[in-house]
Each structure stands twice: as structure tokens, then as C-alpha cells.
Image 1 (tube, rainbow, N blue to C red):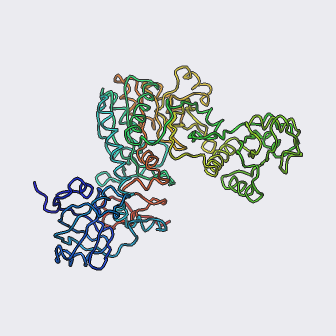
Image 2: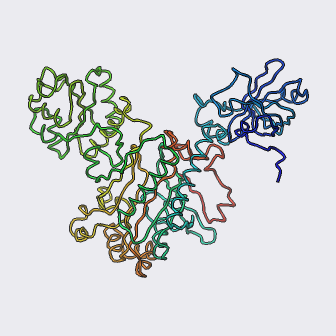
Image 3: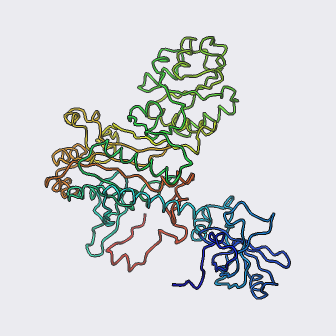
Length: 596
């Protein structure tokens, strides 16, 4: 059927030189050169220059005098080559222009709250308030189209490998998934609540019991947790589960998916193949975090054994109290000024550390003497101890050694973030390189000191290694999980695991986590019963779509790749949500608000 508004998109004009076409879109820019009026017309496909010449048609020229930025217009004209020397190589249609014969203003626009062409200096709150306008900007449209292509690629890839897309409910029962639930009160059942799913974890396991064997969905998930740049209260993940698989089957599938996706959608970005597979304890030791950025070195090293008997009280006290001393070498930073080193100390303190010890190295390991080590604490160490530290950190002349001493978790937190800070300062975070990696062999449980109980490191449905099952009765902290994380460039893209398919082991895990028999039946009775009806071995993973697209788009904030995101404080500035509701609505839900 013919389209009364346009025959072609702006980007198609170059293929129709000498022909008449109709286009429609928004006025991106208007320039009046006296006799001639030029507008850059924008639609989703790109820009096209339109020329209004009063000698061609006076009426179209008159209408063009009324056009302003972001007016919606329809234009009919003839495509022509631009005069020599006026081409614009910056846009795909830069060699042609449309000579207007007819024009129509379809809708006017108020002055915009911010320019479409440049977001620099625009407060993000203004962009979020007028998100429907912000999404007109070419960069945002590119991000949304990239997101579409990523999801389409995933669907096609999995469909070709026998996966079935199945939707699961949004209104569920509240069960522990690692964060607070969003609760929805029931009108029909006073005092009872649904929960929005943090993930479809139990449902995808039940689908394996149902015999579908290969399931996926592009799932919406909800978590009521503190926000940050790579987190939103509602997010999208590729949820995936398979029967009759072990860890290698899941990880091999993920490597194939992401290798193929990068080759198709981002061939200009380099990746490392095969994807590294590292243990949880290894990455904590080497990088201080379980989501390391592997694009660069700056690896951490424990020097506790070297300095335990030194004369430096800060190190000795930390080690004697059960802590550690770790550090890394910042290459070429030995000339850091006192002010710069003081900034690093404050950086460490802001992240929970007591401070930072630095040593600037002038000489090589072979000829190193104490007078070539510049630090306020040099006098507390022998040259042999310093040489061992330099050797352990793989340092050389011109490097700055940075050390932290405290409890292991504090040291790792401080140094892992300082490592990223120094990599950014030194230009080591190559934006054209993505290093995907799998992290395996996490502990199944971690001790909650405040609650005096064991907590799941991932979630309570993660299977332990078969050979570690006896440790559940004697030393739960040593039990390894059949869990794996998928990380890239310092971000966790995904978590997954082989699940428990034996109801007896699953019930034992619930008991270790402190649930009473009654609580187990109330919260998980449906799952335990299902596992008794021939549940197959199964496992899965759930990569985050938002974080993946953020990385592919080169953005630093996840809000840049979500059409209508929330703010850092989980509010919607466009619709003013969350907001109060009427007394009638509360009454229907059998709720009464209590003043704090």
C-alpha cells in the first residue's frame, strides 16, 4: 500500500539521483542563505540535506521559512548531486541533496529543553525528564538499534541450536534470590502479596522437569537494591537453561554465542580466544575481585611472608591480627609527586582502607640499594626484604610500588579499585579490546557473622561438587559450588550454575541455610516435590543484556542503553514514579499507610 507521507527514508536518497521522492521526518537544522533555504532533515535512518529555491517553487520556499528545529515535515522533490566542493563526507548522504518541490508542516514543536546534536553539559535529570526527546538523538537511537540487533542475534543463534523461547510469569511467590523483592499486594486475597521475579530461577528449573531440555527467554527481572552505574531496579537478561549438561557444555555454548555475536555486530573490537577460565580463589589473589578487568596486568601480590618480621609496625600489626599485606607495581609512576601520592592515599581511605604505603624504585633488581628506594618507610626494611618485594611484584626501574595492609577483604577491595584507577591513568584500558572470561569454583556458602548463619554465595539452588557433598555435614565453608561467573572488562555479565536435581540434597542445603522444616515446605515445597518426579541433571546461565549492550556501545552508564531507565535513586523523572496513590486504591488492596 502506498504511504501518503513518504516513499523513501532519508538514507535511501543516494540511490535515486535524478528521481522524485517523498521524505518525512524532523528538521535537524535550518539555514537561511538569503534566497536559498537549507534544512537537514532527520529520520531514524539518518540525515538528508533539502534545498528550497524560490525559483523552483515559491510555495515550498514560503513554507520552509516557517520551519524550525524539530518541526515534523513532509517534503517531495528531486534528488540531485551536490555542486562540486559542497559535499559533506561526514554523513552517508553527503554527496546528494533533495531539491524541494512540495513541503508540508505536519506538526510544530516548542523550543527544545536541550539541543539534539550535543549532550555535553546537559544535566542527566533533564535528559531523563524529557526522555522521549532524548531518545531522538542519533547516539541514543544507535544504542537502541544496537540493543535490538543484539537481542535478534541471540534469538536466531539459540533457535538454530534447538532452544525454545518460553515466557514465565511476572507475578510470583516471594523466594530468596539474593536481594529484596518488589512486592505487589493482592486485591482478591487480603494480606497476601505477589513478588516481581528477581529472575525466573525456579521456573526455568521446573521447565527442565517438564522435559523441554533447552529453554530461553529475554526476561525482565526486578531487584530492590541500591543503584549504581551498571545496575537498575528493573533489567533484562538472557535467561537460559539446559538439561543433561555439565559446566563445560554451558560455557562452550556461551563462548560460541559471544564469539559469533562479536564477529557479526562488532568486528572492529578485538577479543581474546579462547575465553580464559580462572578459579575464584585465583582471581581474588591476583586481582582482588571476582570480576577482574583482564585487559592489562598490574597484578596484585601478597608479601605478608616477606614483611611479617620487618620493623614496620603497620605491616606487622596487620599480619598479627590475621590480616595480609598486598601490593602491585604501577609502571613508570616513580616520579609521582607528594600531592599525587596523597591523592592515592585518599582514594584508598575512601574505599575503606586505613591508608597506602608507596615505594618509588630507581634501580634495577640487580643493582638495587636502599638509596634507590624512595619512601618514608624505607628505613624499616632491609635491602633483601625490598628486593624480595620488588621481585614478587615484578617491578622495575621507574615503578611505584603500592601496598595496603588490613583484613583480606579490605585489602582486596582497596587494591582492586586502585588497580583500575591506575590503569585508567596510564591508558591501559583499551576501549577496542574486550576480554571475556569465566570464573569458576566459588565457595558454595559464606558465613554471615551478623546473622550467625550460612548464606548461599550465589543462590540456594546451586549444586555442590559431588566429591564435596560429605563436607556439608562437617565443614560447609570448604564446599565448592558448581557455579560460574561470566565477566568482561571489569563487569560481571552473568552468573550461572549446575543446579541441584536431587530433592534430598536440595532440602539439606535449605536446612544448612537456617530454614525450618515448616519454612522449607512453605517456600519451596513446590520445587522439592517437582524434583521427585524425575528431574534431569540441568544447568544454566543468565547474561545481562543491559550491561552487554553498554559495553558494546562504549558507554559508561547502563541508563544510556535502556529506553526508559530509572535514576540512581530508582525514580522515574518523566512520569514522577513512584508516586502516591488514592485512598480508594489503598482501601481496595486492604492497605493502610503508617507514618514513620
